[in-house]
Length: 91
Image (cartoon, one colour):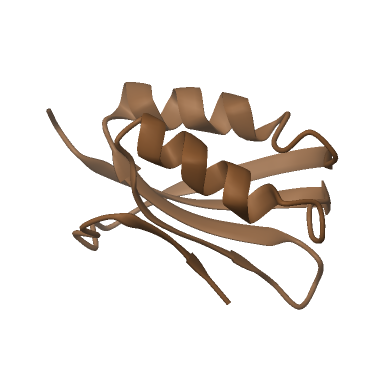
């Protein structure tokens, strides 16, 4: 598997609605490494590493997110690999 890295920003009502927890559950299910954290702007930022297929599927899932979130946009860009070993929730 050729591993790639996405930096992802999720915009909308994504804080205080268990978005990070659900993102971690989905990333773990998909064997994606990286982290998710809340940003002061109200967005959620994610670094994710896996195959292009895994990450594209994850990005599609992020458009829905957690049951109570309202996602208005998902942006991502490919960056250099950081060799994350697991997926974590950061504060």
